[in-house]
Length: 616
Picture 1 (tube, helix red, strand yellow):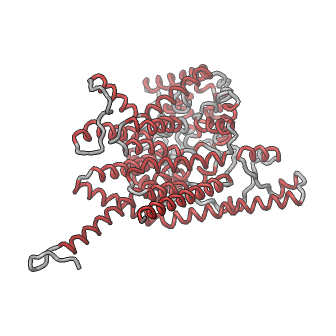
Picture 2: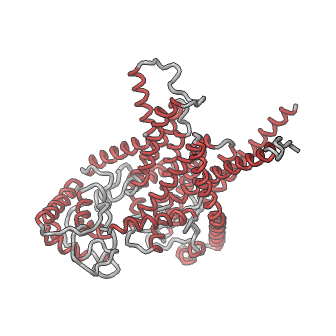
């Protein structure tokens, strides 16, 4: 009878826990559906991706070829086309991705936790995890980055946590890694930071499975399928297939890259995922940045000065024909100097105005000719290369100390992202929730955006007067404004809660990792190593992402770097939150063991007369 009562109580508790989780999930979805998204009429960023999504939806791939058609990968436009095809409101789609990613990560990490309640806590803290406001609010590809990164790492952890089991059980996690990594890779051009954990994770899984576990005394280890014929060729095939599962995310990257290249080759005649990093245009930019103009007063914010452009024009007759100087003012602050990589857009505008960007293959050949002429000028000595470090064709030349200085900036960025820097909705956005861009301010365009978001958008008094709104419509609009402001207040309250606790959990998680490291060195337990290697992998991935952002903005001051981290480093917000949970669990377990050891020593230690102390 007592056992039945205990079982009943457990089932009742489980039922209420499921109801609680479901309710909190629905509440989170409601908040995201009415989130104050930012609509920006930026033809090279937000609006560019939205228009490409409409082209894909209409079966036209990325649309007519132009100087912007292949500037960015198709990852976000494909997402927009997908939700439009299935009539899923944008806010709901983002909310579902967040909830799905949080749930999958909690499932992946479940074997590390002995209680289901911890998995529920991990799910909730990820579900409500704040990320920097503008990556979340803008209708732009950065909104997907943190959650796809979480899915990718979940796929690696999901397999590693089940490395003892039959690899057949790895298949769902391998599929997850294949799809999420492939999608992530064509989302942005700067995703190289995710690669190390995919390679390291795959190697750890393979080494553990075939070199370490077979020689251990693990009772739950399944070396080969029970019904497998123990023939060497079959074993080799089995090992090969297991390795495919372990490295599935990398295969997904390769497949998505090949697929997009093939489509672009057929549609535009150029085999690239994007033409900013993989075409002859990228080669031209890389050579342009390397020109030594011998300018002592050249600011580091300018990667290609007017003098460098002039020298390129003198060295390359083809480059000179486009008259690039004519288009610099549109991208500068009024002068002739164009900051950072904006010079590439200047060149694209000039090339388009010169009659190119009508055919992909012809345009690539045009850039190829410029690259050949510039390279010949370098080879002949007509142009000299700057004494600088060039990590990419998309980054200007930096000095060797920059590489080391930015390690410190990246480390500081770990704290800032772990403290959810810039996650609050700015006060000006909570008070001004209207659309002001000229092309969107018209009523018909606001209605279009309402259909896109699946929610009612508030109008300003001026916009209401243009449509001669009735008092009933005005009252309804006021209710909508109030509703949005409530959402803003709730969201900021959650952010404030996370930020209030972040210094404590940051210190606790770091302490947990340090103590786990010491315990691992002393006791060398497999369970400790598995948790330790996961925590190390997550933390290093965060650091690598922030380091790549710091290197891209090597010439920026700290406050400017913080803004860059806010715009591009939102995956670090989510990954640091997951790291916190792992670290606190490690700290609690070590603390519990230490308390248990102290009690055991107290009640079973020897007294001064050589006899064991008696309990009580």
